[in-house]
Structure formats: structure tokens, C-alpha cells
Length: 251
Image (cartoon, rainbow, N blue to C red; front, side):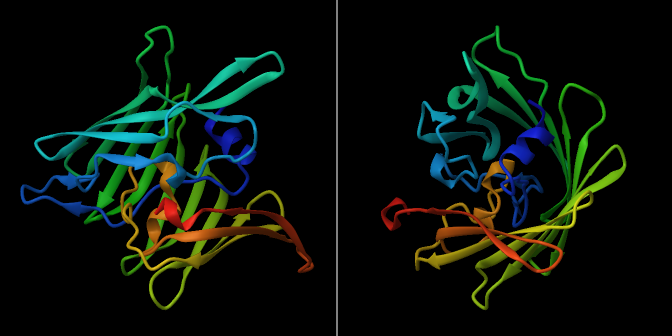
């Protein structure tokens, strides 16, 4: 299943990756901010029965303070009735930093399992401005990012030079993500994700956007406990698209 197909299958959970990276004293990008583990409930992953986790944490490895490996990733397991999405520590990402460029390559501990996934990130200052995702072909999916100060304002998706979709991010007065609106090139309805029930605890992964699936949770100061999805037609009619909640004890 291609990256673009997975993003359609996961609906508006695409995700993408970005923002608030700091730099170390020697100029290297500090991608992981020293975190050793990230619980997988931070991920924008599907919640239906086709998703199966075999581990409950992502592990981050460093060399000289720089992130070099992310252990834990998605793969697809063949079943009689199709495929099931699996999150496992048998999958990992090698991370290489070169100036303002970061390359992620997906690997497997099982040498019989291979991936063609490769991400190339480009920065200006401490912000990601472009992400190229290569899968099987040399034609990448490209994300571009625009900011309002330190806040991510917009993400645009392109393939084969054609604009496909846009995600626009909105924040409340305290800097927490209030909603995001997804619009598409090929149809007129828009999808809206609304984030509510924020706690008062600091968001431990704020700004840690190495993995695309960490967005949009890493954009806020605190932790949202509820996400509601609605669809808005061209005429303005609203349709409920689903809801997800998290327990406060998780954070």
C-alpha cells in the first residue's frame, strides 16, 4: 500500500511532520530533544481492528547527542482477508543529519523484509520547510510547510508537480491547536479536526516531529484528550465523521 493510499485510508490523519526543532551548540539539529521513549498513543494511528501494536513505545537512540535511530514503525501483515497494519519494534528508522538536511530510511530487523521508504527533510533555521517521501519510485511525495512565527500555519501536499491537498492549522490563545482544516484539489468538501479537553500538563513531545505520524499532537503546549472529525460539504452541510478520546492518566 503506497504512502498516498495510506493517507486516504487513514482519512485526515496524515500526517506529516514538523516544527520547533532546536539546534545544538555545534549547529546540529536536535531532533529528539533527548527523549528516550515515546508511547505509541502519541501517534496518529488508526483505531479500528485492523491496527495491531506488538510494542507500546517508540525508542530513540543517540550518538553524541544527535538522534541516529528510531526503533518502532508501521508495517503490513498479510492475512486471509487482506492486510493488517502492525506497529512493531522489528521496524526502525536510520536517521542521518547533514547540515540543514535530514534523511530517514526505514529498515527491518528481519532481513527478509525490506522497505523502500525514504524521507528527506529540509530546514530553514529551526523549522522544517520541505519533506520529500520516496516509496518504490524516484518520484517523491512532497510536503511544504508555512509558519506564522513559531506556529505551523499550513501544510501543502504535491505529487508529480500537482497540488493534491492543504492542511490549515488554527490555535487558541494559549498556543494549543484548536482545529485543522483539510481541503483537496479533486473534490469540494472539507474535513475538519477539532481538538478539545486539553489538560494542564506540558506536552512532552512538543516540537519532536521526526516521524510524520507525531503530527498534529506535537504542535501544542498541552495535551488534547479529545479529537472530533466533521466533514463540510460545498453547501455548508456538516456530517459527523468520528471521535477519539484519550485518558488523562496517559499523559
